Image (cartoon, rainbow, N blue to C red; front, side, top):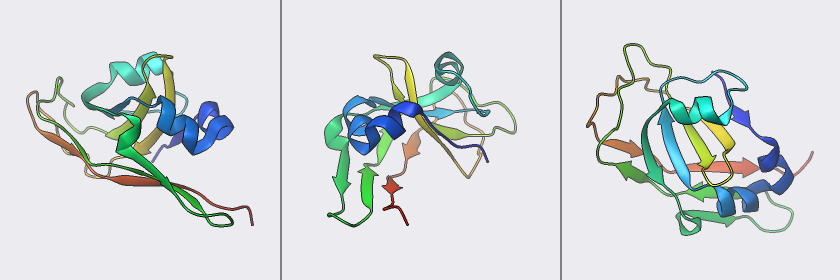
Length: 129
């Protein structure tokens, strides 16, 4: 189960993520260190994101949590193929940056025209221990 958080995420944290990520994409496959063009080319469904879709919470001394709203793509643009290894990518399409990729656990086959619901997720940055 590959996951990735890019330098922009670590350098700017949750605020950079909230400010710059403008697309959530369901991708049919992902390998460690795939570049932006590869990730973008593997999108089968997507939903636009704006900063108000994301809420940062957590007080001083507590973990900081970014909650991303549930989004829907009413018509998948591509098919996943048989036996996909689905992931969800969070992209800045203006600067061609992959901020994060996380596993999508169902790995269901997606066909063109399928409705895709992206669940609400949380990203947590814990206090150092």
